[in-house]
Length: 116
Length: 114
Image (tube, rainbow over all chains, first blue to last red; front, side, top):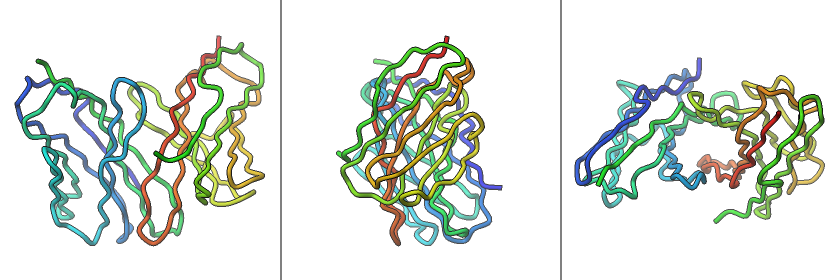
């Protein structure tokens, strides 16, 4: 089965707190890609990061960081010192490459509310 | 921003009527997708296309058909709309490639079936 689980439906934090959004994936393919997208209240879907299955290096971009662990099939997203503008729905996605198709499977999303 | 235009942006229609949503891209990307977004379900793949006249079903394809006669256009048709198809529909594109480029999304079409 190919699946993405975002168990946290909604998270509320106070501004400047750190927050981690969890993403667990399932695939039997050895080659796959993982993504995070942000959907702010305005509704558009914004690409944040891509990671392939052979690159387990963590990545940091400003206040955002991503922790990829193949051993636990997780690709978690941490926002440091959260801001009100971080309030959005965040989606994790998986694109397995074993069958040669280019499908992208999304989790159900985590709604993050950052309170001033 | 990727050149993706969805039309219409909003539509209200009655149960049983046919509806066609259009996605137009100016990026010459090979892959195009239709997703629907519903509360509690995230984004679910309806159909996708991997080239002109080449399409395949996603996880929620029942009640939907698609066509791609040109690289730049991908049409989603609801032959006989039902209330369960009330949703926000997103088109997305990707150029595939060895590094599996990310999806870039259009701004969505909000469809209400009354």
